[in-house]
Length: 460
Image 1 (cartoon, rainbow, N blue to C red):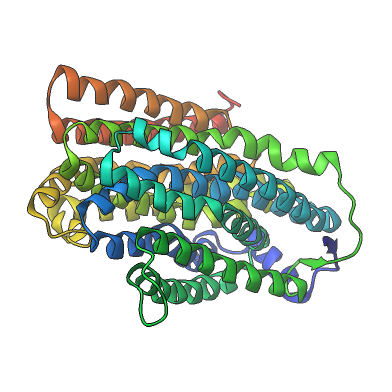
Image 2: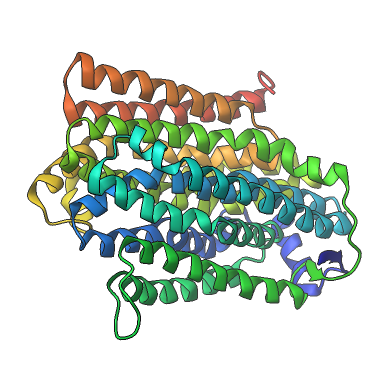
């Protein structure tokens, strides 16, 4: 199977003109709407549905999912943001420069990369997962639940990576409306499968925690099958076919020179959140479950930002490819402003009514108390998450240094600050929440200042 470039059909050509010449804010919103649906479904609803039903099995099972959550998000963010965004940016730049043959050929190169990385994730977490979750503080029923869910998810890692690759191809062309329908349909399937496989019904046995992971993999596989068929149909600027396989080193490099360095970003981000999970685990199972539930709202901010940022990748990448650098910068700042407004508003709601979120996962008083206490403070930093839209502008331009500086700085702050909060100050959940908010603020400010200085010519 390979990707054969074809003459861009009229809808694809019109969409490219829109990216290059259309009004910035309306075009961003037009691209953002389906991308927001995709990312809220993929990262928030899917994982929250799993947690909702698994939480009915008990607090130990919910705490087990909290242990696996940072590593699952690591894979999703690497697949969608790092490698997926690099592929989307490379496709967009090729389209903007009129290199339609390269735009098509990039897709099969992206699928090869996805298959290799997916196999690596499966091997590592199926073998080392139990030891890793134990090191993160899991034991007894909590550790058992974490291993069950992890094994189901990472055995099917290829489903995540293939879906993310195909999704990124569509994002790079700017023809994203179909993605919303695909992901909503897949989530309807997922919502039906989770309770069926977790609790069983009729001839279907109760698989418990494993059932939630299997349901997720099945729904992602169905989505991948549909997108494969859609790309074969030739309804976008690239077409999936069985002809003309030819691997090119420069096309692998076009993806990897951005995707590989930025793969460190979700690694550092999720290592930081895993450390927070470890710190919370030292305060007891109830605190671990509560903080884990609260941290899920932070993860909601990333699909919101990525929903806008996916449009930024297509618009900025296409304009950079066409040499329209000033317009590319205006697009980036416009998207960042909208993202800050959205994440700041969500943070405000979380500060005022934290129980609205925590109650989705548990009604246990001790778990709820820890979760609401953490969320009330940590949400002070949510507005700064919106600045991560500028990271995707850097990505669309093929640059990675300053986004990595930002996330590395946050990782150091969370690692050191979390230790101080727990061991030195004994400030408990509140101390962890303060460190979380400060880390978000620092990372957002670094990316914003670096992007502004780049425009002034002070940094590269």
